[in-house]
Image (cartoon, rainbow, N blue to C red; front, side, top):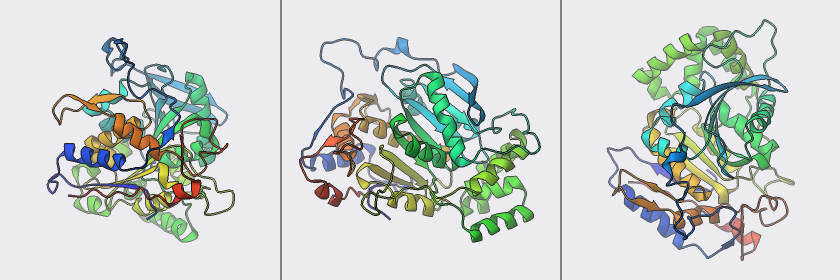
Length: 413
């Protein structure tokens, strides 16, 4: 496993460390780092003039149920999008992309309906993207329809950004959606401020994997084949209620012809062309802060570890979640929400949040924000490559020294 920030969230039954101690450990680690100067593009805390801030002005919030559907024309066909709210100042939009076999409802409803997540998302415009033909009620694609490639699916997203007037996005992708968002960030880095990638596999399928997929398709139904991609073997063997529910939903709510097209295209993907800076000449990697997430024993675990090895360790967080299986956003939405909150704090967009699981008072995030923002400077950020974005820190140390710093942290109970 490549270096990076590693959080191992244990199961509730085995955890003895309170949430407050976990935050203290994170803040203490931050305080131990060398002082670094950085250019602040967004205010970390409200100004002291006593004016009511956007975080406190509840009248500006958009109702949770105020979702609107759009069909957006792109260079590679129509794209179904569901959006809530409108762009708020310089804040990015939260844009999601689902996995194969799902759509935005099946993939993200449990996560975005979590009470703590609602406290976060009401401050942002939220945009859910459905892959072509995968949304509920989508008509069947015509015979002979050429489904967009993974590169083309990524190439559809600038049309979404332009249509709604987003200045940038923070992407949340799962599986195939994580691959698409990573490809989007590689092609259009100035449009992406951060990525949360669950179950990403940056590698294309080899001949052996391709043959195994074909054989599985001959011996199993499409929903059962897709389930092996979504869930861990333990979950499939125990035949949990979650697995049964998703088998039924995939069968009944998604057009099977359209699903087969998306499934075939995902399995035909190529390697994501990225490497850690310094590993190869002219290495290309994700320039924005990234949080990689995978459940324990998930089918994508090996791929996520591989992806971590290809990213800059100074702006990458690796989160392995216990007791979450193959779909942590479904089985552990609370833990993932907490990690996402810290991720946004690290980008300077949330001054404080009220945490019901603690004292109920505001949780100061200035130190957490400074910690995470200190970590976001990549090996090339001090140069002209990322200079136009002004997000990264300005280091007093040399770039070689930065590259040697390890930000690996394991928290266990």
